[in-house]
Image (cartoon, rainbow, N blue to C red; front, side, top):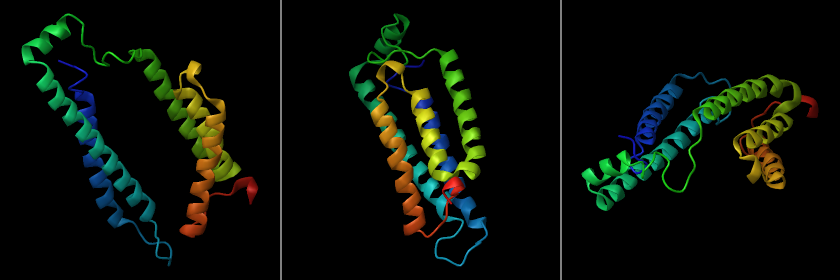
Length: 181
């Protein structure tokens, strides 16, 4: 039985991502140090693993809290009856269900965008490549009627600049410069 309050898929994803982040963090111990600076090749993967762990833990807590709320709100037999009557759906009352075909198309296009991003980054550099990627990804994932182009442009420009200068000045690491030199 799949009920929004139980969010079984989210529970499975949270646990799988928690395990993956732990394995990823442990795996960074085997990375070779390629530089003499304090920040080595293990820094970024560890940072990502920690971030993934934190976000997965938050998702797990949210799912468990929803489960507790649902168990207080409905008795098990009421939940089964509501599911059978189609009064409770997987997405709940506030959201519209996204068709499976659209999900697969968006996932496929996202993978193509990521591959293109990896391909063009050495050519055009981190800043221009990331700006183009973020704009395309925002437009792909956002519902067209809710597009906020000024917000998309602002985020697509500001976020890569902050990341670039954080790595360049703060960590003294170089990101691909491309045409910008």
